[in-house]
Every structure is written in C-alpha cells, then in structure tokens.
Image (cartoon, rainbow, N blue to C red; front, side, top):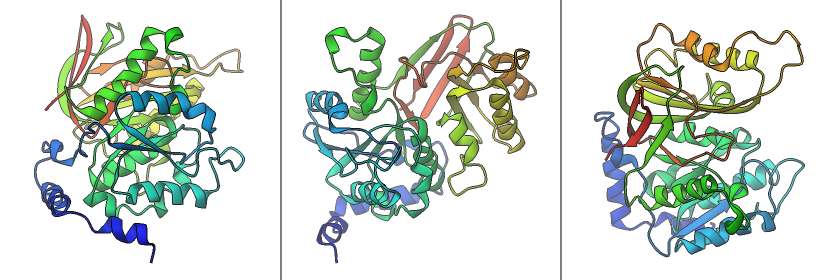
Length: 343
C-alpha cells in the first residue's frame, strides 16, 4: 500500500465532521452554498502547483511561486512542472498521477493549475475525489480548467476559484500594469476569504438591466459546450452563468450559444455575465453579419434575466478571480454592472 495515501486517509475527527455536514447539506436548500466552500487559507498553508493541461517550465512559474510565498503561503511544485509530452505537461498518466496526488494530500490546502491549453478532459474521468470530498481544497485556474470547475460543481457542489494561473504572473512587478496587479491580488483575496469579493464593469449599451441572486458558475464557452451530455455537464438552473472565450469565429460563437440554448442551459438562468471574447477574424470577406452582442441577445431574447457584457473575466489582462459555486448578487443598470459575493 502507498504509505502516503494511507496516511492521508487517516483524517482528524474535525475533517470527518466537515464531510458529514457537507453531505447533509446536499439535500437542503441550494442557497446553503457556504457549507460547500473549502476552508480559506491562512499563513503557512501549502499551495500545490500542477499541470493538468499544457506544459510550463520551472522558470516560467517562478514569479508566481515568489508572489504566493510573499502572501505567506508555502508552495509545492508537482512532478508535472517542467515535464512535457508534446503540448501537454507530461503524459496523460503523469498528469493524472500528479493531480491525484495533490487531491489526496491533506496537507495541501489549494491547487493552482500552472496554465491552461488542453488536456484536462483527457484525465477527468479517472480522477478519484473520495478523499477530496472529506478534506476539500480550493482548485484554481481558468480556460481549460473550466472542465474541473464544472465537474466539481455539478458532481460534488464544492466551490472553486476561476482565475489567472502561473503563466499570467508578471516577472517584474515594477513594470506591471495596474490591472495586472489588481487581478493577481484578487487571487490572494479569494484564497484568504477575509472580505467578500466585489466586481464592477462600466455601462454597456447592449446590457439588459435587472437584478438577480444565485450561485455563480461558468468559464470558457468552448469547454462548457463540449461538456454537454457528459458526467461533467454544467448545471445552470437558478444560477448566474459567466462565459468567456478566445480565438473563435463569430459563427462558431453563434453555434455554441445555440447549443447551450437547445440543451436548456439558458432558459432557467438567474443572470448571464459575458466576459472577454477575443473574436477571430473571419477569412470570409462577407463576415458573419452579427456582432457578439447580437448573437447573445438573440439566444436569450425570450427570457427576462439581466445580461451584461465586457465583464472583467477571460483571456485578457482584466481577468479577476471569481468564486465558482458561491452565491452572488448581479446588478445591471444604467450606471454599470456590479457582481457582489454574498455571505
């Protein structure tokens, strides 16, 4: 028997009690979100870094390591950091083993995915969350890591953090833009949980005004669409959905939103938050004929919930840390948009 795995399964009574409360809350009201949050981090806690998708070098993650250590945390580098199998951070087996080890290690309180790319879907069905459910921890990342966020939320109802990853930390903070600094600091704020998160976006003429409260869930649109019909399929009823994407043609975005509508993912939302969309230029000179805003509003025209555009999340510098699986209030009016975490 693997001694480390055996020892990690001998959890203290407090962790077992946490698991009992978490399981009990599954049958209660969906508003009881706070009982499904992993413990917030304190000084000296360990953050593990792993590569479930694309590869990254030791040198490239060093700015992130130094910054997280400056927050008072310890950092443990996984075996996949520096590993490479073509575009992946090691083979499927290596990436699975590394992430599984961090899920099982109860001394690790958060897992930072080093970068996105592609690869999480290749290992998601082989991951074992049995120890994680008893001793949960924050999982951090975005882009391809949307696969993990959706899987955690839909199957186990645990909160996670959609945010920048190691490859987005500036190497020279003295030269970093204000928005870079603010978004990186939002990760620290989310991990420590010392105050409720609040985000603002300027008024956009295409917004649909209104207010709503609900659990926040979402991520990369392409990943969300690709999960339809799988064990990791996103569950959106009664929730505030946020989406973002990069490098997609407008017709492709239209197709993905049609998929969400046909799959019933848009009709029972409490609100829709549209983040950054870096649209790929169409090779056809005629173009698609509709803007991103027109595409979105066409798919939700029969629903009355609030919709906002240009929210600071996505493949861009303005990519703030969002707590997936946590209840928020969305306010969209003529002054702009406010997304506020609720206690």
